Length: 526
Image 1 (cartoon, rainbow, N blue to C red):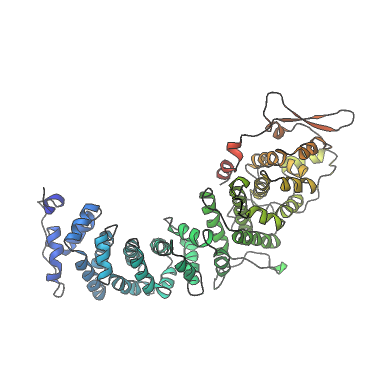
Image 2 (image 1 turned 90 degrees about the vertical axis):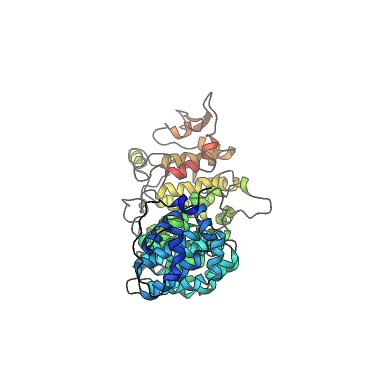
């Protein structure tokens, strides 16, 4: 078997003279021996490279290299030798990546306290050293994966004050490993989740949200952390409300109404939550508390949004109140797509029914009636007699896709829910929904969502089908959206009464594999 040196180090490597490090020559010898070099700089570079493999990390653990590296970190931190400090930290990070022996040695050699001292110095600078902070946090993140004892040691040293300071460092490269540490410590530990979402811990969460809103994120740890706190647990209402405290962001709501206003951090939080829910729509089942909180946010945002101007962009628009309204609506859309009747256990509370009991359908139908109709409908109505349809609507879509998103929520709610189908008919919503089955430049995929909603409204419901057949049609009776459902409207030329009949050879349903949860449409609206 080849020796360690022959396996990873080329024979022709020529070392440099050992620099003076205030009596550290004896401490450095294990590193120089393991790397077959005579220069500390060269030794660190070599070991950083080779320690990327599991086999090399295991071999270095047998050589008990980690305590030596910890001593270097402590020494270079005290002497302000940044280059050597960073390289020592990188080697320490690699050694602790999945190698239990090294992770345990770090724990036993008081490594958490050593790295904490480095982080305190780097984070408290007037211009925090993000490079040192990032590698130091990566060390702790790798160690935290070793288990509960290691996580507890980190938590006790850093929560809440040190985490709070680090959360305020406006750097993407430091925020990613910080989120990894917090998520790893909190995952499967409800007690720590609760601590993080109480008075002492909330500044940490809010600081992270503001940092990510400012500089973005590169890894998924931020989303995993938010999912754990806000979707898999009950803490979203508190996190959302605290996100507005102490912020310098300017409000974008309409202060004339006197209603609660929103800040950009809250709009950003809703945006990320909506992305998480859409990405994990098959696995996340939200609580009724979360759903009602989002509905409450939507209601408040509707009261402060200015509907006087037609939106020229999709979300995010840059207007906080509009973005809050839009993202809360999208979250409601996905909640209603996920919480289908077939997904519920007999003893489970239907979250959608909870939303419906708080007048969700009534709110959306009222908004639709108040909105200016789609352009193609406006053109038809101007040429017809306009009986029973609203041409005096005073509200315009505040962003591209607002109408589509409302139709999507209605359609998802109506899926195999007879009481929703009844409610829409009883509130004269059938003709209103028929108007939405058209293409519209201001609402991409409006026609597809309109057809989906109409299908759910008519499926298995003879009264609604008859209501469509009984409509006093105005103008053209060419309704391709009904053809997609395998149906056709015929009009008695004398009475002008309509009837709904099946098209021979067609099936009176859409393809359920495409529309059951609307998942394809959800993806296509991004």
